[in-house]
Length: 391
Image 1 (cartoon, rainbow, N blue to C red):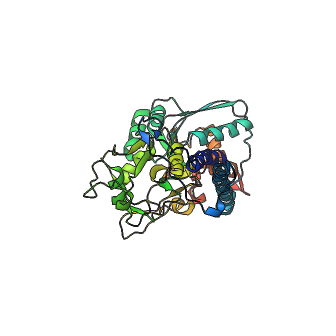
Image 2 (cartoon, rainbow, N blue to C red):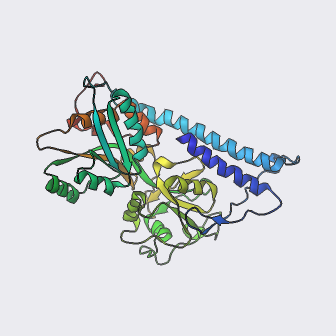
């Protein structure tokens, strides 16, 4: 997953480097994906004179090769980061020992698009141990999963947020059963910029001024980079906003943090088909800013520290700040099921969740760039652990 996203980013860099080094024509603006609105052209990188190959055609190829090499070096560093920071966390989870019962039938999971790829991979791994069990995963959003659970169309609802008390009461009333939720991982909603953009941090008010059409927290909207950061080398260049679909949970959480009840501005806004496209734009365009999850980070884009006010503290998204909740836009990755009163729940569901909360399951979660929950958060109803094994 990390490799695929890095290669996509490297491809953008190759094209940008080739265009920037070609003396024939300047790069032309192209429509942003899914908008029909011209995208700002890629700025030419400044290269040291002694770093340019002056042989015929050498300038373009040399620039592109350097860009790709730099992106691949970022991939190597990302892999080292996993080894150094996350291996110990993953190894703290118990190993999964297959259940003596050969599970059969179906396990239906509906909900969060953020969690869809993760749950699909986990389902495939669990099916490998129990070939007669059929696990289906349907994406569409947390609310879709909640509705399917209430109507009996799924066994597990995937939600990239916790249940509200009103939702919990409604599930009890409409089903006569007790809703049970488990946090299987953590994520954070992040503000991305190009890696070469040195802006040190953004406040809640600044984010409101950049992204909100009402900009209730500031007297005037923030359109240019020197309005957000007077020292910005981008000067008075317009800020280009890249956001996911307006119905996304990512955008919903960002709005609740800095612009509740307000709408995303239409000025210099480009709506992308998904969070990976948002981060790709931040990789490619120096003046870009975008919203996506921590799990979609890439080497050529930077996650900006955010703070409640100019006095700080400014907190950068990281494995630690997301796990301990100090990052302001931390969110849980949650699954919800229904249990009869006095029951822990269906045994197949419980065993699947033991697999998810095992070293194997958490390794898959981390491979997809999510963050493991604290080992202490494993609920007691999931069972006992003995000699580093689920029993």
